[in-house]
Length: 117
Length: 116
Image (cartoon, rainbow over all chains, first blue to last red; front, side, top):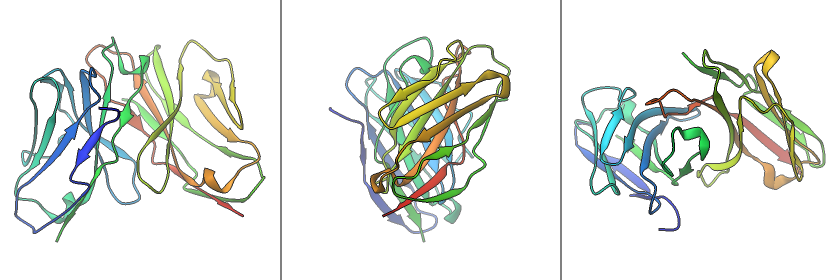
């Protein structure tokens, strides 16, 4: 696609329920990243994919968080047993392949605003 | 570990004023990249500039200019003759060139409000 697409754009869920957030990167972008932005805060790195593998998942805050990527394209971030502190905007970004991110930078999606009530 | 500090939480200026957003970073790597992103009220992050650690030349793009100084570990961003459309949150970010480490480290952002 022309840009990074994320769905849903907004999600309200009850505490304890599971949620799935979807990211569709730019075609040809083999690198994919998930970040979280809490209200009034900066961006917190969650996980990085290169193709379908995740060489860096150091930012996932707990084992309730998981992510997968299939076909080197779409990625799903799953949060199990959601808590109120999970409320945030979840941003996805993708980039062209390269020896490091700095060569090309990222293109970000518009994010999914998750509210846990 | 790398760190990016944007000490200015919020700045308010009147249209046509010049404004500088500060960014100070910490890294142990000798090869790294610095970025600025703009986040307008719509929420999407817009890439503004990338600068590698070996290029200390200042850069100007229209009303935007960037001052990179390795000696003070700073990468400041100046908007000349600010406009209302410049109102947004601006993030500075750092990427280290270590193999396998791909994530950007972001500062906490500076909210710029340009009043008409």
